[in-house]
Length: 285
Image (cartoon, rainbow, N blue to C red; front, side):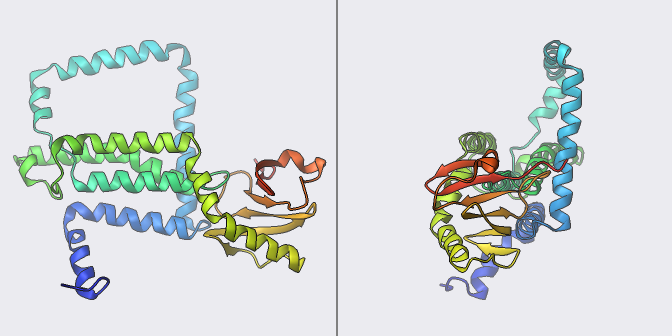
């Protein structure tokens, strides 16, 4: 038996990545890693701009079509139902294979990026952009792949790469369940609360060290898994921004062991627990 982390062990673990169906998830994982590790890098900025552009693209039509949204939705549903009733379309749908491992891995990576993006104050727009755009592209990529295989006369159920051993029903329900779970966790602010709770002891040590030295550390700096910047002594405590947070304003945490911040600055802070506050700066838009 190969020992864990040996060369042969890694070769066995990474062997599926040589298959074509796993190259997409591998590229996606490398992209998300680059965005997470370099929140001020080009990839992060491109993903953030992509999310903002997609938001504007969806927001403008929804605003312009707000009065006809319901009739348009009904008409679209009726059109899709009529299209599905066509025998040729039904035959094509029956030939669609269930989602492969590449699709499920893509959904998992996208959900992880979204949860990590929501784990900091102000959200990491770059990670959110990468995750949301991945979820938008995946269905079309999967459908295009199925159509390509169908045109080549191949049985997609038996020739698709990376189907693994998961049952068919689980493959159809895994992605929706994953997305529903992600939405529920984000709705209840679980990612940010859980990450802060785990990092709080180390963050407290970091803040106390800065207060005792009465000087801010170098910027940017690593603290409890966060990449922090602009650490400042203010109102008897300290505050710092988290690199990559927000889009038009800085966001971060603040530590006030002697009490609440000055009233003139109080609107910038949201109390979390004890001496800790969530902090947001002025909008630069």
